[in-house]
Image (cartoon, rainbow, N blue to C red; front, side, top):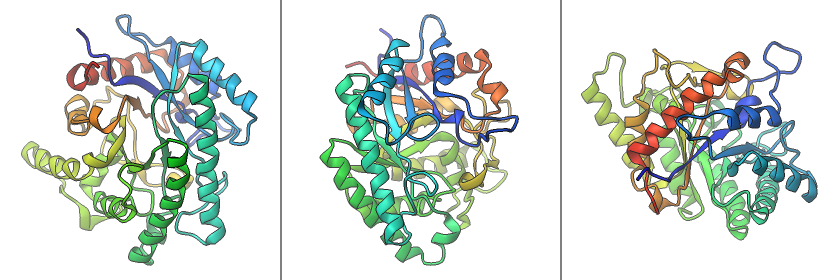
Amino acid sequence: MPNAFPKLHNAMWPGLVGKEPGTDHPPISLDHMLELTAAAEVNGQKFEGVDLFLFHPHTDPDASDDDIRAMADKIASYGLNVGSVVAPVWPGTVGGSAMGNELERDNFVLAVQKACRIAKILNEHGVRKYGVIRIDSADSPTHWADDPIGNTRKIAQTFKEAAKIAKDHGERLAMEGEICWAGMHSWQAALKLLEEVKMPGTVGFQADQAHTYLYLLGYNAPEAALLQPGYDETQFVTAYTKMTDALRPWTIDFHVAQNDGSVHGTGSHDKTGRHCPADDPNGKIDIVKTAGYWLKGAKERGIQHICWDGCMFPNGMLEDPKTWNTILAKMIQVRDAHGWNE
């Protein structure tokens, strides 16, 4: 019998992140991202849900209850569920730096509060039955390095305040393990931050295969590197095992992705892990094999879905149906190898 879990989701934010109006890579609407997702099919299997970015132009974080329910109706009409949602915690959205001044930190917490409200409406609608609220520190490793100990404490305190609100809503927060975010720019820094927060039932880790690969190489944190250029397979396994053993117990949200060993980004996402197509010949990761390191014990940690992340893919690639069929096929392989049934 084929595995029914984890459910297979597609991220909607690749239609927004790194996109700029008036250029040759403008934002792709939520409607179109849903159409592309729903159209994908591999041997009768389709995507089962989407993860959402709760900011313009996809979602107004201050949208009325009726508008949120209308969005839920539309998503459900495609036969899709909603899983994890991304809180608009960055400056220029609702939020502000989690290690900034009092107003910035208050705005960060406000962004999580707005995300919890939307998640509650989606839950009550029935389109959302699982998933977390994703956050990051909304600041850079460069700023963090001015005072590593003090800034880690500030971020942790902000996360704790946000977590109180999330817990009251029955939600969990997953901090994104990505090298462009202060306090989570290396596997060691992320682990220290999680231990500083000390709320394992409410605040956990979101692992992305593309981003966490760069943890191994020490981008933005050479002192935390576990691999050097020219590494062999034995060295890779040793390093990957060490990293995942440390972070897996905290991992409550997981992104399937590929990386070619380079960095790419725009704006606040500068110098971040480059997401590559699932079949990219330059991909450094055996997607199916390495997913198993993160998904061990996933059911017990409350993970019920996995999500593909292809941030900053060119629009032409995002709008090519072959892209999504290739991705879906790889995600099916991940579930076949590491999934479960209730």
